[in-house]
Each structure stands twice: as structure tokens, then as C-alpha cells.
Length: 164
Image (cartoon, rainbow, N blue to C red):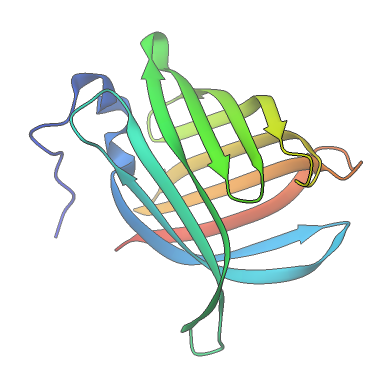
């Protein structure tokens, strides 16, 4: 079934309409402070008629047969497109930090970087981030570079998801 743009989609969301829906797939993680790992992921982009997308990403450990074993990370937020294909994103994590991202929308590609990262006293030290999302041959590909725990900005997570 082909993707259809919802009738009640706010006009400001048209540049991001390609993201709407549920995406599922597998990803990989790596960073100098941890061992390499693989994960399953579900991302939901939804709207309520207002000029923002609600974003929820959930990752989980998967068994060899692909079944979900246990949750890993969750993040949620709001993607707010602005004039001239600019984007503002507010994102929160249950591990004690929140981020403000600024980026650009270029067709079926979004690239953004952190502007502000606020954290609680017990959250891990994350100091910068860069994300890239793109629709390639019907799949959502994304990558997250992170600077944390005294390490410079470098690749951390990447995944390939399909529309569920």
C-alpha cells in the first residue's frame, strides 16, 4: 500500500510528510566507551493537525530470530519545520537529558545538530550531536554522531528502517 499524505496535515508539515508513520528495522552502535552492538528499533512520526510532528524512538535488544528481548533506549520530542526549509527539534530522554536541535530539510533528507543539551546531575555527559535522516529507495536511513564522556564528535548509531 503506497504512502498517502493525510488530509488534515498542517501545510507547514509538507516538507516532512515523507517521515509520517511507523518505521521498524535494525541498527548498529559503536563508541570508544562501549562494546559494539546491534539493536532493533521502532520510530513513530505522528501529527495532530498542528504545525509539528510528534517523534518517538524506541530501541531494544533483539534475539537471533528477530524477536524483541528487552528495551534499550527511548527518546521523544517535537519536530517543528520553519520557513526556508529550516527545522527546530526539541527532544527528551528518560536518562536525564534534553536537547534542542537545529537543522535543514532538503527534499527527503534532514540534517541537524545540537544547539543546547541540558542534563540532570545523574545523566551521562553528552556535549554535542549530529543527525542525518534520509529516505533512500523507500527505506529510512539515519545516523547519529555523538560527543560524550570526553570523546570528540564521532559515529555512534546508525540504522535502516522500513515503513511498517
